[in-house]
Amino acid sequence: MSLAFLLTTLVVVATPGTGVVYTLAAGLSRGPRASVVAAFACTLGIVPHVLATVTGLAALLNASAVAFQAVKCAGVAYLLYMAWATVRDKEVIDVDQDGAPRSAGRVIVRGVLINLLNPKLTIFFLAFLPQFVDPGEPRALPRMLALSGVFMLATFVVFAGYGVLAASVRSHVIARPRVMAWLRRGFAGSFVLLGAKLATTDG
Image (tube, rainbow, N blue to C red):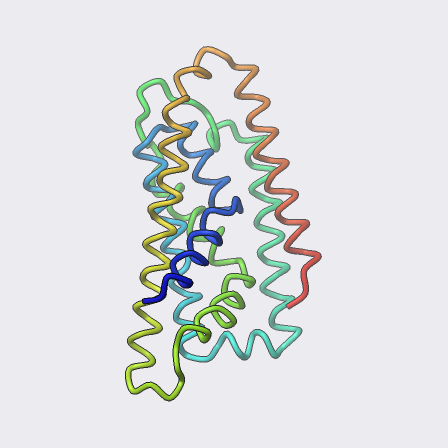
């Protein structure tokens, strides 16, 4: 495994995106356990993209403008829904004093959907992985799966780190409802901006 692959993976994973925003929100609202659950969910959402890339579906998605636009529109719509839910539904980001993850199932579903409905992630794998795998190599498929596994592991570790860091400061906002209100607006705005960025990118 090359150093270039590891460095590129860390840069891509550490760059704030929808998964990072979601994990930060989970850490602030529910504590470290919820942030780890959110990080796991976002990582789980990568699996379909890996399978699509390995089976060649990513190439079809990249070649078909209609298919790409359909998935992209679904992703944008979900990000806008998350923005609306973050502002309207206080349960999305509401500090719980005991830090109990009362709705772990919802955390997982939302985390998976955030990455599942991101067509750029599949295109990323399509353009990224082949650079480190020789198509003529007898073990090309196992190597691609191994590199994908490393990418997913890095995603989980980095996202969980973000979430646990956010959870470490949650005690400072528990007694400040106005701060939480502004945080909800900030996270909602982030989802809107990320949705707008996805909407304006080309496949």
